[in-house]
Amino acid sequence: MQVINICKNIGGIEIQKLTPLQIKEHINAEFARGIKANSIGTQMAIFKCAMRKAEEWQIITKNPCEYIKLPKRTEPKNAIYSPEQVEKLLLTAKSTNLYLPCVLGFLCGLRRGEICGLRWQDIDIETKTADIQHSFDRNPLTKTLELGKVKTMASKSRIVLSDIVIIALKQEQLQQKEYQLKNGPNYKNLDFTWAHSDGSPYLPDYLYAAFIKLLKKAGLPVIRPHDMRHTFATLLWESGLDDKSISAAARHAKTSFTSDYYVHLRQTAKNRPAAAIDSMFKRKLEKD
Image (tube, rainbow, N blue to C red):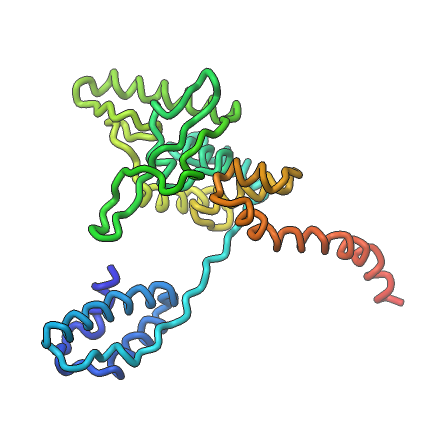
């Protein structure tokens, strides 16, 4: 997609005739049509790499990207749902195929790739535990989705499942047995907990698109699937759990990461008493 966007504006220019000004005009055109700085930065990183290779092969004498300043990348803001919003979404999702992934995201803190990569062999219904072992992630070289092991030791750990999660898993299990009987030999018994009616796994890209549609159906603010994980950890913090317990539940690599992440929440909490007192007297004092 990034390459297609580059080609739209400068694909018709001979590589030897391409100038820094034309590249800058392409960047401005992308901004004008609402493309974010992060996406433009990725485009230019790919293009710069291609131009370096062209220079190395002596197709061009000078890389026109060398003097182009890339736009500043911005970190996406994490959107957090309230308990009421989570409940509303789960109730909306209950009659859809997105109930299990929403439960795993909001109540277990699983990442998008981990939700799609979770298998029945990783779950023990009796002990109410799950071993997070695998994740669907995009290969940086081939750009294809692949099922691989989770990347860190902290991510690869055993989590405890709540009763709501266990019930959702049992319902999914029954549904899959019905699909298996219906499809017979055509059913792909691949062991994934969240699967299509033919047994094949749902993939992260599908989850993203379907999740956004579900939010709109529920009339809720649009967030990313990854924000289910942030909501999970934030609600644990608001319930009074200490950083170490939250870090273990969210499978953060370091407790210090958890502590740093919740600095802004602590500041918000500190501001609440002052805001409460202010609201008590402000209206009356302003009248006087």
